[in-house]
Image: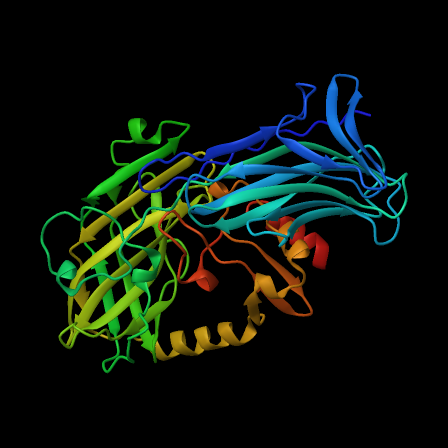
Length: 438
């Protein structure tokens, strides 16, 4: 029986590249248990060798604890792998953590039915820690018999890189400045604040970027195929013209889906957003639109946000930024201030657009937070950081009882505020779903 787990290296990227800090990486291949304190209880605890692999074997109700010093507050990923044998009803292999005396939290378990004595099962999760705390990690077998056995291996504790602190509000003056935008904003800045009020003016008309422009900042994080070098227009933002229709506080683009243009690399894609009023905006309304760049002839999507002010048929400059993607081989941050043209003429199809979007909303499954799906252990297994690198996670969900239990949509600039309207690529999923539902 060979129990080997490929280590997952977690790296999160902020607006500036950041590194995760590995606090512990333990595979017991040294043949020592230095730093671990064990209690065999009514069972047994010892290192176990199978061929070239060494793991920590716990039997009965044995446990082992390790203390890890934390350098700073933030998110900490704790993960391990268990193989198990002879687990009965109510018995389990447990990975537990504690930041306070005798207050243990289970991050994962392997239980009856997962105990073939061969398969390694990854368990773990992310916890929030405070400055000055120490972290205790416990490997435990919750067994009722001496033959109940768990093998623990590949324990890894990583202090995840922090998301860059960004302003959560776009100042009124930022929309009218004529200089380059120096830095991005938090995703929350593109959504109504707690002090926001309902808009007193609707917004219907045509928004246009009439000529390609170079973004104020294009920060390449990953470019496996050299798009930035090979394409002379890669850092140019393509032109677009989009009709907009407001319906109460909702702002609906007339055209949904990729919009063709002459740019060799990407096409704009707009989704429904919001309109509202903020204190201090001198009578102007705010508008926000989720948008994305979709790669031409492919489905890679780079998700972004746009915001601008409007009043009496006039608009301000727009603030645009991109901080997430569904693209493994091409990752970048982009932010810019744009001068856009606005034609204050309602689209002829305005009422049809409103009716169609209302119908779309009525046909959607009820949406609930993923945390309401069930136990923390169950939720931790869906979209697990052990399966998908947090760097690459856009969103995930689970459909149960005709309800969608959905996660937030993390980005390098904080949570995406329009998660329910985030455009996602299909790839082979569409073919699989057609086969599944008939």
